[in-house]
Length: 347
Image (tube, rainbow, N blue to C red; front, side, top):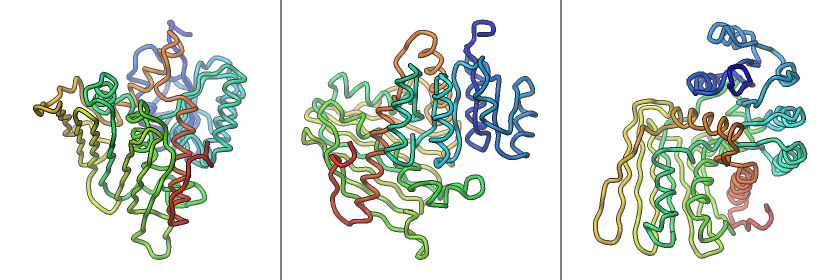
């Protein structure tokens, strides 16, 4: 490591990849030394923004380097498996954007190879590191609400960005719109309720504003039942405005209610609050620092550095990432079948 710093490579320099690059740049203890970008325009942009980094048009050339400690992969969903397998096959540590894969077979391949090569493998569910969503989890674990019984994770927002070459609106490349953003909310719901069991079944429904593209779920809702009797509701609409996310969690002794709002999802100036009810009074819970996915990206890079340097646990493992994909695929199957789906077929 140069100057004792962890050395990072980045595969993908689109809109979101550029945010990852900035998160690496501003995080102590890590250097961004190599970037792989797909198009001529993105390679040119990477060279201009990060003149000290080596920039490649072929990600395999970046992965072939022997001086990288980990690689951060931020590419369209259908490319996750190929790039991740190349990284893990090289013996490097991996931070992979969600969804981990577009099928469970892809997820299983990655977990197997990471285990075989003793590589750290983190999946980009950065909301777990939020100063607010994470505070809610800490309060649940401390017993503030008693045994958790119910969780609602809900989002109302403007439509998705198209993505490079419109990949996000191509079902063959995105896999499912449930894998695109509701996957974060399934992950949070399972995380919040994990003390009382694991998901057993999902019933989901959805519709689209586009009659010729019913597979693009502008409105989506799911009910997920857990083995311990708790249940969660995950709901999203892309037919609204701005970006407004809410969680409500109730238990045998109390409740939590958190909300986050911004003109856009990628804002550094959101409004947010966490309120808690202990059975007697409602209190406002102080949040130590701003929350939002741009802040959590930085926390995610910092956690990866700590995991490499100090063996600190990863915020979201490959096993957790697989669970999130499994819940989304089960929900997609439920939408298509119009019936409840058992999670046993996805474990």
